[in-house]
Length: 412
Image (tube, rainbow, N blue to C red; front, side, top):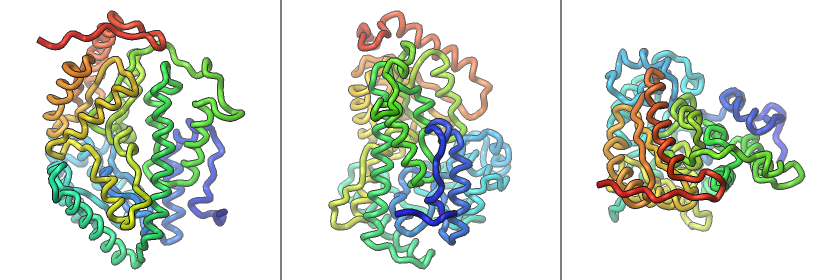
C-alpha cells in the first residue's frame, strides 16, 4: 500500500546500500521526527531482549539508545563511577547532556534486568524519563523461566495499551512479527554471504547494514538491494571476481555489542589484514537467527519465546552461547576467535574462560581476548596484539580461498 507524502514509510532510498546506511542516523532522525509529528510515540530501548514486535503493534517507534561515544562519558561520571562499562556511561551521558534527540523525544524508555550496572543506571534515568523495566529470568533453562518471561511480556503489552491508549490485537502482533521476521531474514541472508571464501564484504561493511530503528520500509528495500548487489542476483549483480577481497585472516568476533560509534576495535582488527566473517554479539548474528513463530495461536507467547532464547552472558548457565559459537565456527570457517570485553563488563569477562576453552581445546582455534573501553589510548597496543596473532595464523595457514590450516596444538 502506498504511503501518504510526508509519512515515515514514504521516505525513499535513492542511494546505493552502503551510502544509504552511512547516513543511517540522519534517516532515523527524519523517520522518527515524521512519526512524532503524526502522534506516534517514540520508545527508547536499551537491550535486544525488548520485544520490538509488541512496540510496533502498539503503533510506537522503537529506537535503540545504546551509545558508543566517548564524548558523553565525562558528563555521566558526575553521577556514575568511573570503573563502569563505557556503554552504560555513554548512554547515560546523553541523558545528562541532552544531546540525543531520540532520547529527548522518547515518550517511554524500556529496560530489562540484565547486568547490575544497567539496572542501577536505569534507576537514575527513571528520575527524569518515564521507564518500564522488564524482569528477565536469570536461570536460562529453569522450567519456570519461560512462563515467567511470557507473563512479563504480557504485562508489558498491557502497560503499553494503558499508557498509549491503544489496543494491541493478535492481528497487530502478527503483522508486526511478520515485519520483524522479514527484517531479520534479510539481515541473516546478508550475514550468510560472509560464509563465502573470500566474502564479498568486510565485517565493518556488514555491520553498517543495520539501523537503530526497526522496520523502516526504506531500510528493508536497501537490504534487498544489497543482497542483489553482493550475491550477484539479478541484472545488477556484480561478477564475483569484482567482489572478492584479498586473502585475509578470517575472524569470528564474540563478546560485547559494537553499537554505533564504538566500532574502533573492529576497525583495528580488519586494518591489520583480517576480515571479521562472523559477529556472534548482540549487534551481529545473535538477535537475528531466530524468528517469531507466526503459527502459534498466542502471539505474545510466540514473541516471548523468540526473545527468551537469546544467549546473553547475564544468564546462568549460558551454555546456549557456546552452542551458538560451535555452530558459527562450522558455518563461517574462521581462522581464530577474538573476544571483545568492555572494561567492567563482569559477565562477559568471566564467561571468557569458557569461550577460550571452547576455542582452543574443542575448535582448535587461536583465541585472543581484548579488554578495552571507548577511548583510543590503547589502540597501538591492541593493534600489536592482533598483528602478532595474525602472524602466527599466517605461518600455519594457506589463506588462499578454500585452503586450510594446520591444527592448533591443544594448550598444555
